[in-house]
Amino acid sequence: MEQEAGKDFNTLVAQRVGRQIARAREGVGGRRMTAQALANRTAELGHPLDRSVIAKLEKGFRQTVTVADVLVLARALDVAPVALLFALDEPQVELLPGEVRPTWPALQWFGAEGPYPAASGGDVEPQRWDPPPTIALFRQHEDFVRQCQQAAARAAESRLQSTLAGAEDRAQLEAAAEADAQLALSLRDTIKAFRKSLRAAKHEPPQLPKALRGLDEDAK
Image 1: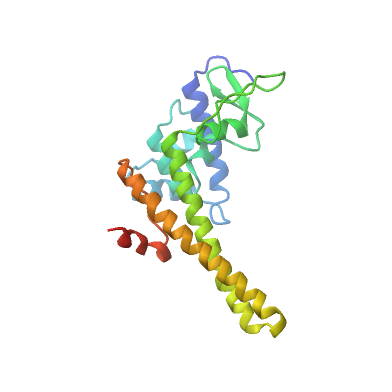
Image 2: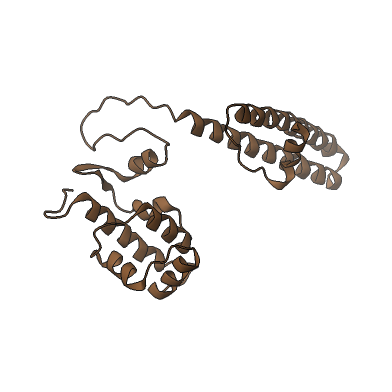
C-alpha cells in the first residue's frame, strides 16, 4: 500500500474515517442510521456536524478530521473511537505518512497495548515493550476488580447449587463456595489498598461497580 499521489496524510486519515462512518451507519442497532439522524445526534452531543459534512467525509471529499469529530461521531454511532480509525477487515493501514503497518498491531499501539509495529514481511528484531506506567496500574486495578467479582459470583453459584445437591455433593460445593468467598474478601482488601496507593500517587481510581463501592467508604 502506498500513499495516494497528491493526497497528504491528513486527507488519507479523513478518508479512512469517512469509510468507517459509512460502514458504522449501516449497522447501528441492527438498522441503518441516516446521515441526517447522525448529524442530529452530533448536535445533541454538543459538537454539531452538518449532514453535508458527514456526506463529504463518507465520500472522501473532506481533507481533515479532528479528534473532536472522531470522539463525537463514535459516540453518536455507538462505536469505539478506534473503530473509526482502523478497519480490521483491511490487513494493513498507513499508520504514519508512508509507513504501512499490519492493522491489528497498529490498533494495539494506538490503544497503548503494544509497541509501534514493525513493517510486514522479513525478519525483524523483537521490540521491547513496557506499557505506560499509569495505564498499567489502571489495568491492574481493573483485573483485581474483575477477579473479585468473578470469585463472588462463583461463591454465590456454589451456595445455590449446594442447596439443590444431594448430601454427597453438598459438602464439596459448600467448600468451594467458602474458598471463593474468602478469595473475594482477600481481593476486596487488595483493591482497597491499591486504590489508596493510586490516590497517594495523585491518580484518581475509576469508579467501582455498585457491589464494591463501599470499599472507598471503608478506606476513609
